[in-house]
Image (cartoon, rainbow, N blue to C red; front, top):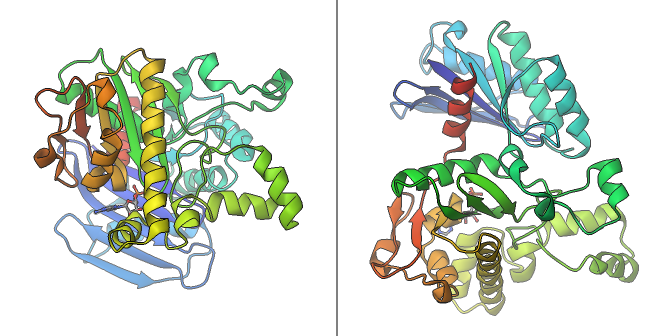
Length: 394
Ligand code: AMP
């Protein structure tokens, strides 16, 4: 069985072709700057060979066509015929209230994804374009939609409802949805495998450019830090996370900003970038902090502190915690981040093994022998999770 996984962003398309018998990635690649000048594509196959070229990509249909061409390429291809692909799994950002699990795409599903455009305006239209491009270029091949929000649909009302007038929930479905669901689901599943126990209270920390934390009890999400949009929660690369909403009116008045400008500031100019004034990349901030930059130091302190506060609140939400899992760019690769966050959690019985923690990008249990809570690093693999969900459905 060969599954193609597509992840359509606002101007990009990431793809992986996975052989599900071996879980080997046969080929993967990235189309960038779709709809802009200087679009480019990179393509890499299982033996390490790769190419990169500039190519005109007007829209996601062009991009999907290029993916097909790459997979069939004389020198860098891995397929003889496109019909060798058994199904396509699409990452879809927002499933709104409609989807609590992956689904095979039909016209009703497409209509629901369309209804969620307003909730995910930068992603859902492109996700649907990717689906429709595949329908056109690979007629008859099953398409599966895997939603970033679906895993969080098990949250109880007390966790997802905001303390706003109830009519806004009824009229506009304003509520917490949560994101990174595929990643939280994958790493929590891996954790239950690693610990050989499926009845656990797990806190999963997806710490990357975008970051979120999730409370998972017996395999089900019961709360998560991102909200109606991915802006809520932790301080992130460029997103502010939790702030007093009154700051928005204050800034609009004092700085004479439009609503779009404030939106841009909160999403793209805040977070560790906004505090440090240096970069949104944690590697740059860690390096600057080591060199004594005070704003880089405080940006990191804020990031660690917020993570620890969320972990504490989710330990309360579940009345305990058996395991804390770190994943994504920073969670997988930054021992100092894990150490600093865990240093706030001794009251929960969290003790790290410093030597084991000194690792990057691989699964490890870095809890000390006397730790009451298991501490794990689990590299996320959203593409494999999407492929598995797709396979399960077809
Ligand atoms: P992601 O969004 O999951 O791709 O994660 C991207 C973030 O992870 C960026 O801010 C990177 O700086 C950070 N990151 C990746 N590798 C490392 C590393 N070795 N040390 C610290 N941060 C890292």
